[in-house]
Image (cartoon, rainbow, N blue to C red; front, top):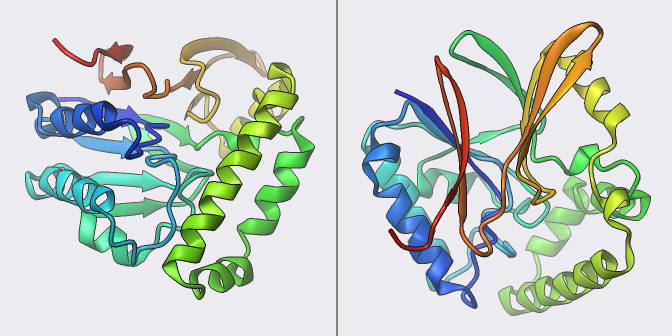
Length: 243
């Protein structure tokens, strides 16, 4: 048995092959036989509210609910693209919502789980925007607007995000090592799993004289990416579009 982690799928109607890969993977024996499936944020390119009547949210809900109905817990942590996903959709999709950050024990090892954007402290512009849009007041105000207005806002936000990414150095948008170590110390762990940066890798580090690891999940733009954790160790691998 194993525990599986994915993030940064950025599912969108413009990339139907990735949505199909997501559905196939969730229907696979690996997922249906797992101890748990964790989705650590940015499941979609943009989430405009649980009342979205488009086809994509319904496809996602069917896929994740089927995993939960098969007896496999499905945990979901908000990312920077889907932080408006709420309790109503979580119930419909069979998701258990997680705080960011949170600590779960994986086969006896307390492990810090994060989306990862909180660790990118050098990107001060992004951190300010993040703080503003995560307030209950901002979210309530946006969700009170008509659905079409929210879709237009999502499109505008994506364009602004792309412009910011294009004008900001890669180092600034990556995690800050001091922030990583501070988060791990605060949580009392030597293992951290996160996504967001789209730079899949396993980083070894010395944390106050102890060997520690930071495991970064990959995105789902050109292929899938999955982390498999079991009692024997970890396996971070790509997931091809076709066998």
